[in-house]
Length: 194
Image 1: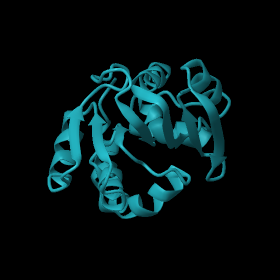
Image 2 (image 1 turned 90 degrees about the vertical axis):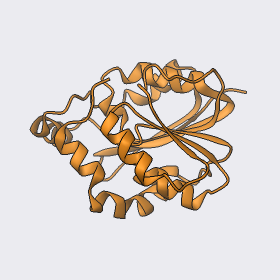
Image 3 (image 1 turned 180 degrees about the vertical axis):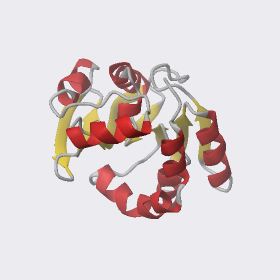
Image 4 (image 1 turned 45 degrees about the vertical axis):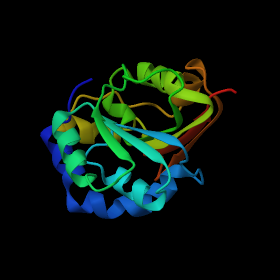
């Protein structure tokens, strides 16, 4: 999985992104409360993780990112959060045992994984039976393609018709995918069968 472009790296560490993490978190979680062992995929500089740790202090949060610069930034940001660990990890080859997590979250990162279907299979593998996968991502539209073309970042944007069947194919069920923000984004939930 490639690292972020310079533009994306700047954005993930920018004050505006950190300011909006709070309002975005509730919207992204769609009423799901992270409990137990929680995995955040592609956590970037840790803005969403910091808000998760603040709102849900009882969960054990593991934050991952493939980009070493983002891992370092997240480690700094989350150094005082006692139940949070940060690890470098590729979402297509997660270094965790089967059934390690109760909840997995992904916030605006799946499209950065060119082989995002493999990442979904890994999420299904590391979730415990009955575990939940929740988050949001961009939809493949002319606007989102133009933004990624301009910043030259490696990506594979997902059409709104691709995600649901891919989640089912990965072995998840109770799949719900809804478009949002003028159909430029989509929110999703899925769970691993018990």
